Each structure stands twice: as structure tokens, then as C-alpha cells.
Image (cartoon, rainbow over all chains, first blue to last red; front, side, top):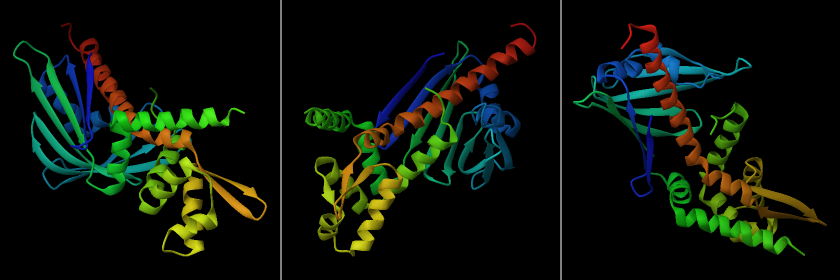
Length: 157
Length: 118
């Protein structure tokens, strides 16, 4: 399985693409069937439980993940657009992390196999822009690393 | 990359919260370059000493700055490692989605073994 990731700081977007060995209808069920969604949403240590599931525009999906000590974290989707089995768009909310817009595209190849794209767009907000400029921009990342090196060099007596 | 343990997630959340404020981001950028006393920082912003002290406490809680005592002064310096970790945050979000896609593929592979032969 090939997974490619593209990050665009200006568009505040991270795009992940992958090729899957299954028809589009099958891949769609992994999103559209809450029992199947529970199988992959959370890591094995933090399985997800879907509480509410309404995959229609304006509808909500809510879930929680349970950690090893029984601690729970909740999250939700606000469904923006649905076009089975090819397109799904929703806002993804987590209590402490800014809400992101997720766009899923599922396209079957004529020769078999399915191309899936997951596009995550971060909100336009000052704090997010700041993080993205550091996290997405190689130049900024390098500046932080250089600063770190400079401080280390200074620390040498 | 491994998906986060909950305590790591908590620290990510704290970093997000800490960097969501302009004054706090400014304090981080300044103290990365120089050590400042809390009172010197307080003189830079149009707010009370107590308010600046509170901002510093939030940054300290997120481990973005480190504080030390020097006589009567409290000196604040930026924690470069933590700032770099914050800059790695997006890599972490990427890792979460990559792990999900891995599980996606695993489930699809199970279809083949559970169902009839291909």
C-alpha cells in the first residue's frame, strides 16, 4: 500500500492519498457503516464507540474513544456533504484541538483498485496559521532548528 | 510513528492552548532569544504584572518556557525542544491519519481471508 502526503501551508491543507485493493462501494462502507468505522477510527489501545450516527448533510456523528485505564475522550463530525460512494465532507471536532474540515474522495480505477484522498483543512485563525507556518514551512522549521543549535553552541563553556 | 498515548495527547492540547494567544506567542519568541525576568516582560505589554505572570504560567504548564529563580527575580527562557515539538505537531496529526489508513487496509485484507477466495 502506498500512502503519500502533501502539505500546503498557504492553503492550510494536508492531503493524504492512498491506493486500496477493493471496490469503491466496499471502501465507502468503512466510513458509512458505524460498526466498521469503530474498527479503524481509534488505535487498538483506544477503540472508538459511535454514539450517534447520521450521515446526511447537516447530520452529526458522535463517538468516544476509551483508553486502557477506561478514560474516555469524545469527538464529533458535523456532516457537510455526502455523495455515496464517492464523496464525504465533514467538520471534525475534538474538545481540545481546533476543528478541521475533512474531505474524502473515493474513486475506483477502471482496472480495479480504489484511489482514496483525505484532505484535511485547518481553520483560518491566527494561532493555527502560526502553527502551520512553523510545521509546514521548511524554512521556519529550519530556523527553529538553527536556533536550537545556536543555543546549544552557546551553552558550551 | 506510533499514535499518541493519552498523556502525550494532553501535552499536545496544552501546547495548542498556550499558543492560541498572541501575547504568549510573543513571550515564547522573545524568550527563545534571551532570558527575561517576569517584570521585564510585564513592562512590554499593556497589562498588569499579574496578567503577564499568568501567561508565563500557562506557557510553563505547556513546557514552552522554563523558569528559574535568581535572587528576587524569576527568569524566563524559551524551551527550544518544546517549541520544536510543537512544530512537529502536524507530523503527529499526519501519523494519526497514516495509522488509520493502515487499519483501513488491514480490514480490507481481512475481507479477502474471511470471504471466498479471490
